[in-house]
Image: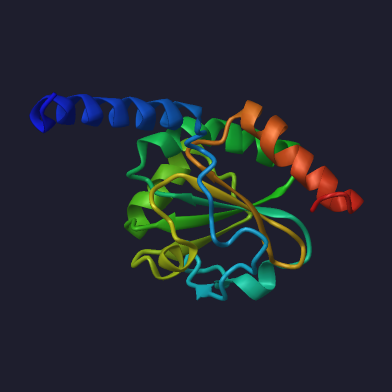
Length: 179
């Protein structure tokens, strides 16, 4: 057999192997170099100009979710009702990071849909997002009381993800049984 006859078969076999491996991966569980590392240091203007700035140092003290969103983000609208539920239940502190947005658009969006956040940093020019390795919105980080990132979700938060991915980690960290 000539090389010309074998080459297409070899390329096809390589593609099949890559696709088979890809199907076993969980796309929402992207590895992050920040897991178990401190949240990058930042101080941002608050989305609401009459509120104090949002700083990484001031956020320490208890577990919180840092949720990256934007009024332009369709998937953020999908997760928003569940974030409102989490806020109403008071299960965890929610901190927003309004990313690559116009202030007036974000405020109007929150006025229309409700504001689930305890505070919101305004990251119009991606200063913090770049430091966190943000690739899109929404992304949500679980941060422990010492300010270390413990988990990262890419995509919308859902009740199932909260129950299966976030709550067990929080419980294990509180009980000292997490690695």
